[in-house]
Length: 298
Image 1 (tube, one colour):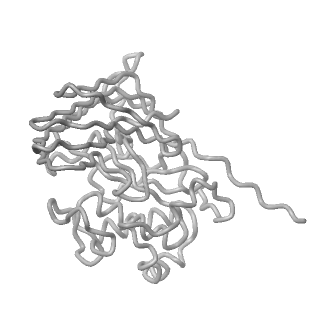
Image 2: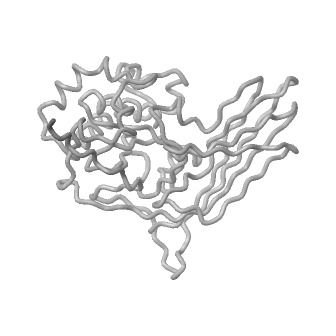
Image 3: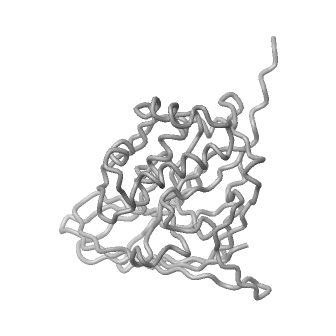
């Protein structure tokens, strides 16, 4: 078990007409990621609303800000229990056996045009042995062909753009890996979060995008950018791509400053400090769903 404490601070200047915000900065509460404590601070006197999506477990904070400066800060301490499995024992799940809630992650989406990458994916990965190892091969292919480069993409950059440009940030790596997985019928989804253990050479701690792929009836974590340590990921939101998982969406005139994020590892109740590290095993923080039983004959 890994115990992590983090703080997120977001600062804005709201225009004269005010602005509606939807934030997705709360730690997801799942059986594997327990939120032990959390705090929320809003600099304006507002009446925020919270909503938790029943399927994704994304936690949304909605508010209407008045003109002027606005600071939103959120902090939490979480216990993360990883399911650990041997990669060679994890098989792909046939389309007919996929739970209904997983099917949406087979289809193309705004930033993950898997239909346009089908021919490439079949050529590169169609001949490989199916299972976790094929997903790992897709992850490695993306990591080796795309260079991490700050400020090299925009909010409209897609998986196809990243493939052409061969450069991007973590969300671009994630979109390309997701599109390639879906192109060979492997469900994959986008995850936004923060991470402990990122390479400090890349700059201050920031939000991080990674990938979860549905194999072995679980969502297993992959980091195609190679800039972080999966054991140190704290999940905030999941979705088809970044459009579903933005940490902040604004409806009105506003300017923003760079997020300020801090994260640290803490000892558990027994005083044991577990620091996230790279491991060879497959890691999952999602218990998965019951497989679909084969249809019986008439």
